[in-house]
Length: 475
Image (cartoon, rainbow, N blue to C red; front, top):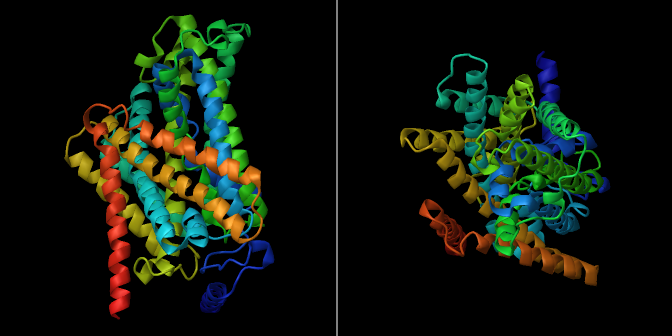
């Protein structure tokens, strides 16, 4: 055993100081495992980051409330928008690999200030996801326990258990994380797809003319629906944090971004069409239903399938928690390595080769935030909405900075083309429209202030950069 431990320590030391070969784009390993994740496991990180099973359970009803019968079209448009975003990210992901993800990409093209702004934004997004997803896990887990007649557990206990289990898995092994996320999401998507297929079979595959003809839609409803639909895709970029651990990352990571977006987009379009159709036939108002999948299963006389969909939604949120933790820890590790945060967070475990200090830190912050809101006695659904919106702002800014940086990077390497400029411009306009669409017209209640709270967070990040620069100059 001691000899085996010494061998692992030597391997870790070698990995920390070596560089990845040409197939890895010359990226440093940072002490992480190299080339251990298959293309499918890399894809699992992006899919789990989006938690696509959550859309039929929660988001589709919200999109229908604004876009109505155009819900499927809104998701189709959102899919195209996110494919354009993925193309901008892939400008970097196909040429270099790094666990720093969007932070490193923005730094390469725009310098350390743009890089810090991007990393600062995406760190907030991943950390808040680590608070929101366990809360959603707890909500659906308790709903499942209630439906099958078992005692409900305290919500805080379920949420904390979700965070702790995710932290243990992320601390232990990236391969274990990837395999767990892969199977959890596959099972969840399969169950929901079966329910949607049963809905169409029950209607003998008759077309829903109200949806096909886009009955009763308007431009404002489409705009608001598009904002919510794009929110369903955030997290798809998380595979870019596996730059050291994915096999042939310059190929598998770009493929993961495109394939996860297309796969999830088609799933959203199909499930939206089926769910809206099912509610139209039943005469129930979709936008008033809090558990649409359960209601549809009951209408079909298949309550067991409804119970399974709720369980699958809870499972999906656990997978999303794990994906956010894996991604956030690697971004924090890389930023710490570059001197933005304490060096301790840049260290990796001697045996597990995971950024263990970063994992512990981010999971602890997520648990503390969840605890604060539990103590405040706020409605959990309100908390999920507030923090989910802030997290989405972080993703949108990071996507936007990378989209702006992509043509700069290409020009610097004499690879700039007209299509690349067009893709960057269109994507930036779309992302800016979505971001400012959450501000104007001003929403009601707390949501009115969330964009300004996020802007204050960005200003705080700028002040940190400025303070660090002054300290460096004084030294």
